Length: 242
Length: 256
Image (cartoon, rainbow over all chains, first blue to last red; front, side):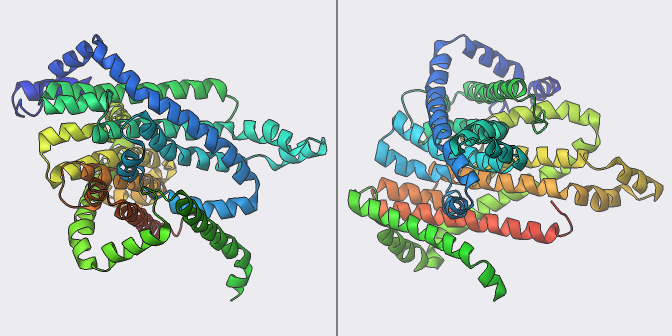
């Protein structure tokens, strides 16, 4: 709030040229107006859809894989080497390649988002399975639980908070990638596409407004995940209010 | 020698894994015979011929411009966020004013700033450096704040008793104690910096690593495109390795 007032004063006093920074009140007004328009909501949907599909697929791949790698030392050692080789490749470097292979449609976005989201979920799952209380796992064995049952009933719940943290991190990564593919590859609709359009029209206020909206989307995602985390994983001490 | 022997199984597994990956890559691509997915030998040949054989050229046109942007943006953001982070960490009221803003900036996906900066700052290096800096800024800042806040109050009381000046308090008490957290932030943001560097170079540039990949894809040179991706992966690994090296030296005393 203080920032908005300061910005308003600075721009009204014309310390900064109006061409660069429109007065804060106008930007906020533009943002509010934007929420009344259907363009925003369809753009929002177009951006979030590949995000959610990609996030879902990445979770479906990374969690079982992470459990497997977390439980077996041999597979872990072998896989970690491969993972360390693949992970440093920046996901955005794959955008040109993905465009060639999949075109500029939703598949390309989803593929990139899956690639980028797998890593945080995978690492957190592995880490989570390593944190499982050894006594709990041994107890399960003493009671004659089968391996798969032990994994499902002991390891998975115990690792769940970590897995969830991974998914939360991956969600913001997914949003980043969705927006950058829209900026770089274009597309039919989406927040990135609208931003690019606003830029091409030289509409500064609208550009600021869309940046603010993307920020609000990120913030909303953060709060949704945080509230789920607090409700579902209230029993762990590991979850901090962060 | 004993180190090698005790780690032999380990090394063998790792080598086998890399071998398996390469073999799979080779097998899959030669089966597919697709233009888009060249076999690894041609890719590595391209890395050698196009990137390493004329290294002075590719250094001048691709590596150096990219590194300059990356390191400038990263360095500026690192210094600024450590300074501001210490201030916020020490002052509750200042923190209460500023923190909501930081959380909001962090929530904005950094690439969303790209169109805005293209309008405001043009297409020169400034825009790319600022983009990198703004993406790297929040993680380092938040980690610094947390590091400073978690310092044992007794340390400050001791500093009070010993009448240590404010400046020395910052350099000798606060910074060392917060260093592990700060480094954690630095490492997270290094990968973000590389990503943003590539993004900024995929639009409105004439040099840099990202530009080279873009150009290869525009000219339908798939092998070179893959080579570029491999090179970027290596660059990321090297940068991360440097950071870990520095961290180990600086934090040798710490158990974290």
